[in-house]
Every structure is written in C-alpha cells, then in structure tokens.
Image (cartoon, rainbow, N blue to C red):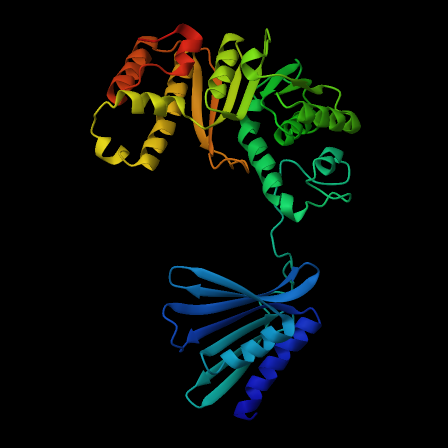
Length: 396
C-alpha cells in the first residue's frame, strides 16, 4: 500500500465507523508540534442538543482543554493533525483497532483485533444521581419555573435546580436520624419563593415517606400567596406558608428550624427560637453579618490581625467568621453538635456557609465554652453578640 494511502484509509475508516455507529474512540499521540506541554488528544463522539459532535480533549502536563466540533469539521481537523503534528493515531472501533504511525517519511497502518465490541454512551453529561428527580409528575417544579411541562429543567433554572439538590443532599443524613413514624414538625424561616421548602417537603414526604408538617414563614405577602397556590395545586396537604417575620413568629414546639439567607441578626432570631423550642435540628445559611463588624469598628481593639483587617474586605470576612463562629459555640453551649459546610449560594448572596446543629444527649462543658467566647470577644473588641442577648443578655 502506498505511503499516502495509509493515511487515506485511516481517515476513511474514521468516517465510516462514525457513520455506521462502530466508532469507540480516537487517540492522537507522539506530538511534534510547538505547543508547550501538550501530550495527547483524546477524541470521542458525543450527543449535544440532539446533534452529534466530536469532542477533542487536549491533554497537557497539568491541565485538560476540551473543544467540540461538528463531525465533518472534526474529521478534517484530524486529517490535518496526523502525520504533521501527531505521528501516531489509534482508532478503536467495534470491529477492529487501527494504528497509524509515521516514521520520518514512511507510514504504517496496523489492523488489530478490537479492544471492545461496545459503543460508549454518547451522553455529553453523565447522568447525575439527583436527590430530587425531574419528571412531569413534579408539578411544583414547573409552577416554580424550574422545569417545562415535560419535566425538563429549563436552561436558566439549572443553578436553582442544582442548589435544591445540594441542599437536600447535605441535609439527608441528619434528617434520616429522625423517626419516620412520628410527625416531623419543621419551620422554614424566611422561606422566600419556597424553592428549597418545596424540595424538602417532596423529599421527606415522597422519598423518605415521613409524616411531616412544614410551615414556611415569609414577610412578603405576595410570595406567601404564590406559595400557597402552588401548594394547593400540587396536593401538598401538610405544607403551608404564613405571613410574618422571624422574630415575631410564635411556636411552642419544633423538631427542625431552618433559616437560609436570613439577613444579619434574623439568623440569630431563628437560632434562638430553635434553642428555646428544643428543636432537634437547627439549619442556617447566614448572610449580611453587620452586627459584629459594627462592634469591631466601634471599639477598635488592637490585636495581631489589626495590620491585616485595616483593609475593609478583610475586616468584613473576619466579622463573618467571628459571627458564625460564636454562633456555633453558643449552639454547642446548649448541647448541639455543630457542623459547618459549604452550600451553593443563593442568587442574591455570595455567602455559602451553612451551620448544621444537631441536638445531642451529651452534657457540654459550658464553662469551657464560656471562656472561649469571652477570650474571642476581648481579643476582637466585641461587647456582645446579638444571639447572647436573645438567650441570656451575656455569657460573660
């Protein structure tokens, strides 16, 4: 076979294997071009928005870069690369493997037994194990604008759908610790449009089969009315929304209290209600922690971090850390085991910290915790933390 024919046969085999659904993958190696640290290119066929593409993964020493091309354009590009920049090309099909090699001015084409007789999945994105599945039975997701009528997630709502699943995935282990035979009483403080509230109800009711009663508390009347309309249409009998503010909402007993992105001290109002009602689980994702920053700025106490926190952005981050750190310590003082995790932020805030506090039967070392809080407050010039005032004026 003529030298030029080897390449022609190889390119034709790529084309025919794609057309006949025999294509497995293609690898270009032995790079001789001038791009620093490029080692190989791995090529696979994918399906994107019902159109086939060739996906090129450029493998560098410390990174990968992916570029997708229409099939015909991708084949022409491969034709340009092999024998010029890449001197070895390995094509795997379900019938045979083909190896094209170039040595100086000579080429060789080897035909080998197939490595596999299975064509790989063409899905561009691997199917993810979502906690909240999407189908046309999830009416609330459609009414909230997350899915279309067929149950497919709308492009602009992908982040919100991801946030709902991230939220459920984080809470799932601690929620499963509750006994499913008793009614689980939950208050979601500052529930907003209810995306996460609806997702939580769906998961507890339809996935874990809990007897659950959830109340969303929201001060904006129009959102309360909207959420109750969606609740009625979805047949969620044990989910309701009420108009009110966190600090004024009265409840005698709760199992779970949630406050996500409640502004500034509203998070403390929710935590205090959870502690006072004996909630077994308190979940908060705080934002806008101004109270402690004002304390630090007012008192201007000097410490080893003062040369750093003279920069406003560092002072803000320090105030956030101290605000949530003291919250966690106060929760521990009252017998809660706390965990701080990263949570996908809401569209209206970049804050992504979640405090999960689970009531335990262990007796905490309250004197030790009080001393820790006292030392922190003295060091950073904090007269009081708002949560202290809600619970006992001061721990000092």
